[in-house]
Amino acid sequence: MANFITIFRIFLVFIAAYLLFDKSFAGCMWALLLTIIAFSLDGVDGWVARKLNETSKLGAVLDIMSDRIVENTYWIVFAVLGWLPVVFPLFAITRSFVVDSLRSVAMEQGFTAFGETSMQSDKIGYMICCSKFSRVAYAVAKVLAFILIIFAKIPGLDHDISVFLFAIAYMLAIVALMFCLVRGLPVIFESKRLFKNEKV
Image (tube, rainbow, N blue to C red):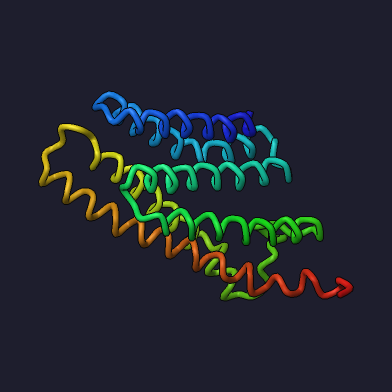
């Protein structure tokens, strides 16, 4: 059930992305609603996994994979629609590939992205990348940015309100992207130890 919820989020986001290209009032409103639901389900899958004793490495991998697909879908769609500069998805996707590639190597060696077996051994690195504050702050900035961008672009919305909302959304998008990049740095810095026994 938990894994189903995780994957279901992806389909909701794909539908929302499709509706945004319709550029109609109804399409944007449905996209906004589906976006809110998709992000609301982000914490539900973990709660269900713990309640039903379904926690597993597969679930952890699917959760990270789902998060990456969801957030990168919005970065790409917003850039294609001309709502954000293309550097947003370029930086976000590059960070995803680099960090998740290193985490896959870490997983082979028994480490996880978060929790007691996290690959982050440095306290500062752990605080930046894995602490609850860091994860929540990034999630809030990202979710609010995405929701407000869609809201600001709803056809028929008062122009002044639209401009005001989009200005806030744009600043939140910058904050979210900065969080995204900075939180990836500890993974890169600590990845050296994963390759110590590798033959050149």
